Length: 423
Image: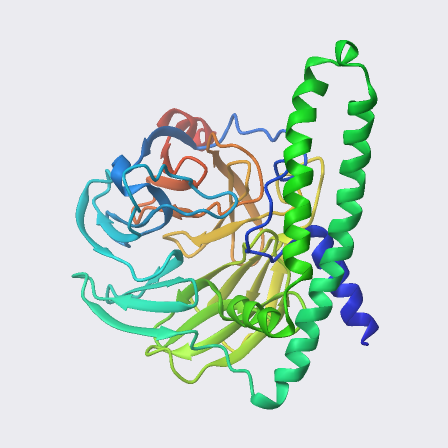
């Protein structure tokens, strides 16, 4: 058995970086405290929020349309960190929505998948990825094409190795989960052994939640333990076909998916009809299913959040520059938290914005030079999709508050701008 592979898998399983299946609900995901940054001189301030009607769930993705409006993804997304809408009135359809600058709907189409990302070409064509497929639409909302996992090919001669890795990954995952379950059982026993009248309110509450949690974990482990190699192969195949992000240039469509073997993300380049896929990047590290990719001019910008950096590559996938580092003291030109930056976007002048999961938006030049803290959206911290975009005239910055299914609108503060421009 390949030792390097086992080490990579063990690390990945320990952090549960790339698993999108149904895990038993336990404690909330860990959030590392982030040192405060000085946003008092930031030129953009939160002015309002954009949201959709309750029957449409929440906003789960967006891009500015390059003019004065927005293009939204709406629906009910059940993954961690995403909007969780009530289902009492029935399923909420996933939609692609074109709006004006105020967020008022102009047109919308229902999507054939649960969307994860979108991108727009200069001619207004919009590409959307989700689940294992990609679809693209004209500016009028007409479906132009759809493909199933165009990036993924598994030759028959690799089926056996693929199955073996799926089984090994399951076994390592079980080992990690068994360790966690043992700790939870020990904690539960300590509380149970304590006389009821001596328990604190927290311990009483913890007793109830831990009891449910332990039972849930036991059922989950039993289910995983009983899965056959064929079932594990099918599960791994579905996961490998997942599409996470899309970015488009004049001639190409770039797709983010998982590495076929091992852990990590990779980028594939296709033509505009999503044919002729070529893997151009591999070994990218991201947390909680997040790996943002953008086309900025003639460069690809990858927010490699687990390594606290932005990678700039050409369209062949060759790295031409990277910038960023981890700094627990939250220096302005670095990134804090467990995994940042989460997302990037281009600015009208050809620069780049980064967004962090605590709401901070920063501006960098394309050579990695830090320019300013643009502003901060009021959002709950935690590893999640934190999409960011700037209006074509540069007057507004939009930040996705995916926990609430809303867009935070940050508007230029003319007073601050005047102060910065004065000698």
